[in-house]
Image (tube, rainbow, N blue to C red):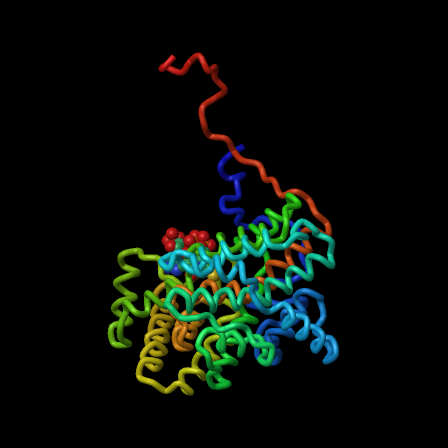
Length: 378
Ligand code: COA
């Protein structure tokens, strides 16, 4: 085997079939179950998109009502989980606490190892309903505040704001968040989804698959990029310095967070919809700070595309949008999980519906076979 036979980073490797989503870089499009993600983001609520991702079709009004009732019935955390969360290290990254909380949910579930289709669906909706409360409670606890329990009176996105801040912001801000939920929900065989499928392929339980996926998403080359983007915008500081900052960063061969994509080479199909929602939100917020971050984003984007021909990915507009919604930076990747739990669990269900253990080969480059007696210390 030569180095050219090896697909480093599995780049270009088609590992399985899927009917959840299709990434079409050649026409710059992404569809969930055949629907364009841009249309879903602007025309549907995230709850409808979650239903679509799991069931393959958009819900009619009766199906949606039933689904919303089911999701609401799964809201709420056990007293044990709340007690454990109060003991979490306040300095740990929220992705670490979220990973631990999901692992806790798994050990709380006496049927965790039931991977029948119905049980997988129940656990998927359960995690979908509980993750927002875990993220919100963790945010409040680390600031010495009492968690605000979920309310069954509010839809999914509104409920998340309510649990974080005790109030629901302007509709344009909720809409921007809801759009980001749809855009982040699913993206074929990215690193975390493939991690979830790999874990599921050993016929381990779905909570283990999601715990592993959270670990994968945390990395700055994957979901962690939305946090890194905001740190970058803070470092840039002002629209006036943005162009020079970018030119200098490129001259010193820095990786610019929020740009580039393994699959999309001429632009991420999700970016225009997210940027549009971010811009509308900036207008509604109307503060100097909001305008500043919008202008910095615009200049960095223009300069990067002009200088390198590398386009922004979804994390680039999502990072500052979350910041302006009032979320603190370490929450951005957990917020990605609030959404991506839908895609991950759909993939776990798909993997287990026709499972084959994922087990690639490796090209060994270590010493040839040798005898233990050759060890010099003996
Ligand atoms: N900043 C600067 N240069 C970049 C870049 C970025 N964000 N993304 C790609 N490039 C450059 C690479 O340096 C490389 O240049 P070279 O050929 O001169 O060495 C070329 O573009 C190809 O990039 P490569 O890293 O091989 O592409 P990849 O498919 O392995 O990487 C990412 C894709 C996403 C890992 C990469 O673009 C990246 O690290 N982006 C920043 C992190 C990020 O935003 N991640 C979220 C992804 S949704």
